[in-house]
Length: 246
Ligand SMILES: *Cc1c(COP(=O)(O)O)cnc(C)c1O
Image (cartoon, rainbow, N blue to C red):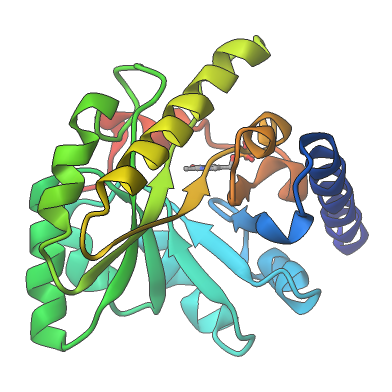
């Protein structure tokens, strides 16, 4: 079990290196984030101890459950799931440094209000729905810039870039077009030079499509299955609007 995880991590590293070579990029530009939904704290620890310290959960409940067991090993927690406004209070208890899934103004506003009262700030990425699938979260590309302009006014939120989940398809070129949409949007936003908005990060690519994402400019890839094995819960449990926690 431990050996499997370590071997998988090595394989992912090699895949990053190969993809970067192909794309003419420096592997240091691509951070590996481990998507740890459904994975036990014990198994996450194996990766943390090996130095893979950027991890992310999809649900506040899971973040909470694993928090005590992971606390002893220094690491960096991002959040990549759909965030309900009624979970804001909770998420701020668990040292999340970046919420990658900010996709609507009311969420940003409530987050800002809460952060103000706690005298804290947080990094965020704006999640964009580049695949046009009804069931996926994220702001539509055509509304993204307006949303970012509005969110940029909240002093406690530091926008660091964009996040997307690519289309689930075996057709690489269709997946690639999602990543291109995100990259183009990033460039358009950089042009606008909006105060309090950085566009350094492009979080895109997962176990099945990380090479394509790296070729299109990903700076953070989010990998779960390829490190920890297949999950028992289907991803629709995490991604589908109809299945969100209340
Ligand atoms: C689960 C998840 C991932 C990782 O997916 P894998 O296919 O297991 O690598 C990446 N991003 C998000 C938002 C996820 O929920």
